[in-house]
Amino acid sequence: MAANRKLLTAAVACAAVFVGVTGCSSEEKDPFDGMSADKIAKKAADASKGAGSFRVSGEGKQDAKTVKVDFSVAKSGDCKGKMDGGKGGVAELLVSGDNQYMKGDEAFWKDAMGGSGQAATLKLEDKWVKTPNAKGEGVCDADAMFRSKELKKLKREKDSEVDGKKAAVLTKDDAGKKTTFYVAAEGKPYFLKVVTSGKEDPGTMHFSDYGKTVTVKAPASSEIMDMEELMKS
Image 1 (cartoon, rainbow, N blue to C red):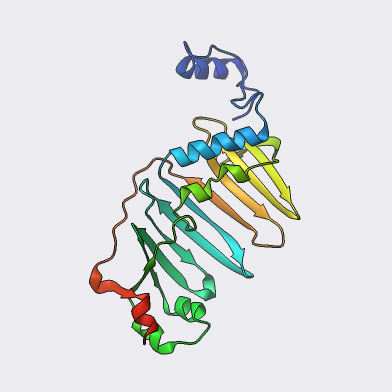
Image 2: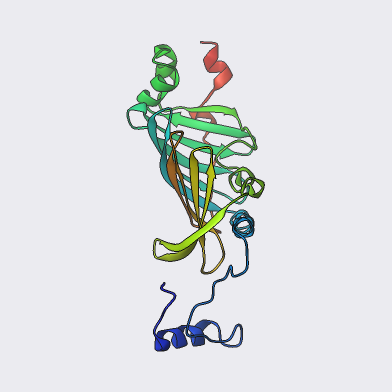
């Protein structure tokens, strides 16, 4: 929303939301007024992690390949989602408790195995591969994703919008890699989008559905192939 509203629009919004709380003004107040970019980022990290559950989707480049992801993370730390590597194949991922389960199409497993292991690939058809959950490293780890201690030496740029929502824009330049963080300036200060540009692993990630219930159920035992068992073949 524009900072310069007509008086009537501002008055109506003020009456509906702020009367008796913050008072009224013909201009919207900056919720981060007086805060450094680093403090805004920490506030966003705390709020985003504190929501418990969220969705992250977007695409980026990894080893010169475009990869699209769409994951929903539950408050428990479990998650479910999909990765689309184009010619590299498509895979589903579930993380439940101490285990991680992955099910990919033929192209995915061939790419993952370097084009070899045809027999193993056939065994994996319609099966979930079970491996230990690498806690602290996976996509489901909110602590790792919203690690505020790494959000340092940021600069606040001109505010922008993400899907119609006003957002504070924070940037960080690090050895040729630029990261831009978009933080909601209305409601709770959640991260809305993160854009990374540069030669190494550029990409854009969108964050949404904060606080919404996410249910993750582990696959049935008949649908699971244990990685150790697979490696014996």
